[in-house]
Image 1 (cartoon, rainbow, N blue to C red):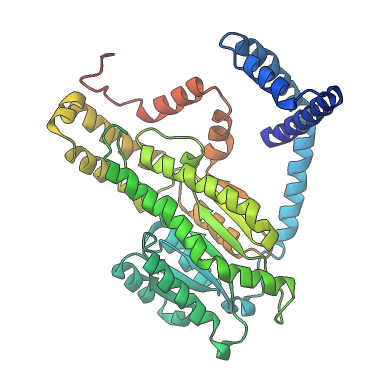
Image 2 (image 1 turned 180 degrees about the vertical axis):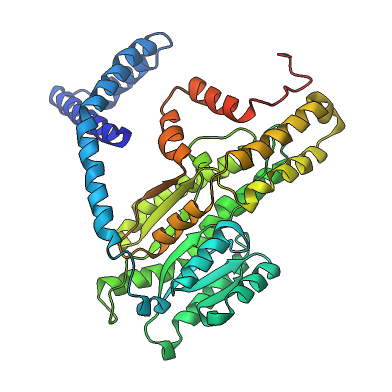
Length: 412
């Protein structure tokens, strides 16, 4: 509904702007002068609230009027999904000729997605950060090891991505196997640092951004040329079977839409990932490549279960003065709040695995965004449109309701 309302407002706003521009042209006045004067009035310290009082009720009324059209659109999506489910993937005997790159396969979503895609018959190029991750995947896929290509992959290293791209090129060039294509790239590798923003060191922010944001950019850049080749082949109908549209599947987080306290560096990096994926989606459409951003809420993975130890590590790196400012009771409550939230409120990770597998392997182009988790789909989405003072207050109380305030906080 909000998307439809935004489209309507943009159309109305654009039409009004064109009308004003044409009027100014007819009178010979520079358009920028009047528009800047209007913009100045709209930002007046007192009058802006009066304008908002008129604008937002009108927007809500328009949203209500659009409700029937939103319902019809979602019914159309239901029918479309039902039809697509009749033939969701390519025939099984053709899947081994299509490769899917997945980063962060040592554990969590990456491990589960790689195993599921492999079990469905695709060739999986699984990037693992550790040698132990490679050994575990190899041990689990001995029955068809030729379709599970485990490679070392450090998304913070240009050299590692270059080597991974060379592995993909070698697989594509194997002429004995016939026409091979790279179908999709799942940018899944991620890390997270827990604790209040005031506790985090610059190195914590740099680590999260290095893996979550810059790592995603490196991964996309490394494999994008192969996806363009697939798109060209699909356009020219090369090969004996239809080639699905190639795609990038970028894992962000619901905290990339709605910031979460005690996860400042993680939330900021996931916001950056979401923005980057949106830009890619608009720019790569002309090449026939789709980009899907996945926004899971909290699901039970090793990333979440490691949150409490991360809080302890961050606390241990603080100065004596900073620890005295917060107090041990506060630290214990932060650790407890993180542990409870990451376990009691975390969903079964299988839902995210299913979404990622579907996005990576569907015969048709996947949706632009996938929101996973009932709380995210029907609760957190609405919070984003509330005034910040209200939405942030709700989220903060929801997560930190049991947290002991810092010992040195004036409010105490």
